[in-house]
Length: 273
Image 1 (tube, rainbow, N blue to C red):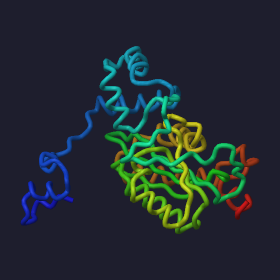
Image 2: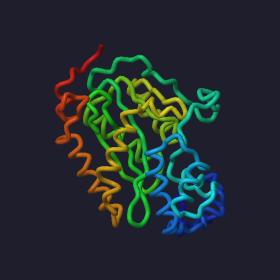
Image 3: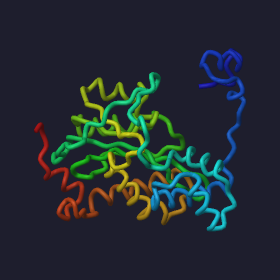
Image 4: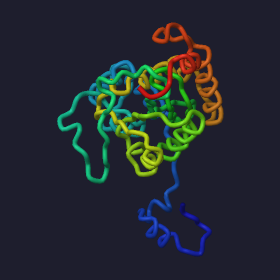
């Protein structure tokens, strides 16, 4: 957004955008190698023990030879977009500047394709750095309808993935997400409301509300991401894309009576209940 060659000064551009003037001069630095190793291990531990917060992860990391403190672990977890999963008081309270929609899937029978979609974002390590992965998943068939890989965690690539899925498969009745800023922002919400799609959001810290996406993240990380050391964003994008194509078209699922998600999407009935 900042144009360094524009006749308007950087200070004035920052004022017009409502951002700090110092951010216009900031040159991003690469993530240190030590932090990349820590982030990779934190991600693995979080998948194994999602209930552990920064203090308990710090203790495990210290025992494994990582001399790291709680605050640094907490900073890296925030950068990766992960947090300990546990019930919290007043979890449904809405912030006036950050509206949250209720969870609509409790007790709902989801046995029709293109009835409920789920969306989420996860961190994926590379050899030097990391990328963010967003996926749109059909709840009944487990098919990954679309996905996007990005170097930034913003709403843009989530909106792009959602609109691509809508173009390919038409609108579902419900889209379920977590309460992340990418999904509660006006840009994302407008895409859904414009098409009359009902919006459902997980309770904060309630990973079971979006359990099928969580299971998919575990699968893609243990069967693809952790086995590779991507040298570039392009390689990560291509390799993850190939795995997701395999996941949907060739990998049988016990919950689908050994069908693949592609077969499930075709054979599970669609339409209104």
